[in-house]
Image (cartoon, rainbow, N blue to C red):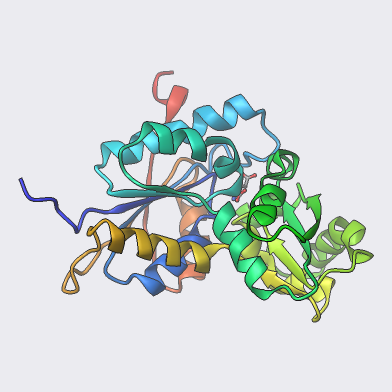
Length: 273
Ligand code: DGL
């Protein structure tokens, strides 16, 4: 049987954050169909134990594999830190994470080689960015900070206003004295707060999101494997949320700038109780 190059790409995240990567995929690869899964019911993943993050992420991966996707993007830094390596070992389709692309994007723009990283507790404690950055540029000096309040703000659609500015300023305070020229938004939810983060951190620091570089990597892999969708294919993206679909739709519609409808997906033990 001939391989169907128009099969979808699976994109997963603990919630709406992966939409920041999905938007770049849609922009750079307009013929690729995306099946998106956001585990909004169990978001945030960042403060959870590693075993739980592993289990939840595999539930999303298994769902996407069942949908016969041709490639999976783990559009979540936390899940990438925990699961990427084993997913690559176990699956026969290509799996891409967001940490290596984010690190590469930062090394491309930094001049001082002093880089900040913000992310979830798990991502920061895993030291994954530091390792990825050192792999590309041995001379780099890295300072990381976990920002636990940010994901709940984004998931509840709070991305502007005085309260958000205050929370962001208070959370980032420990980084303000660090002399850096580049700050990696090491959580895919954070680009939704980029305006506020940029104001707090100042105009001399470049903010890096991994979406752009991740999409470049996906494009290269599709091309290398000869599985890029046809130029005449018009994709219809599919969105799943495990929690309240209306709140997901609101944020997705806003971020993707088009009306989005989401289906409710039941994962894990919720489906058996
Ligand atoms: N968007 C996710 C990330 O990139 C994680 C958010 C969370 O669930 O804590 O790390």
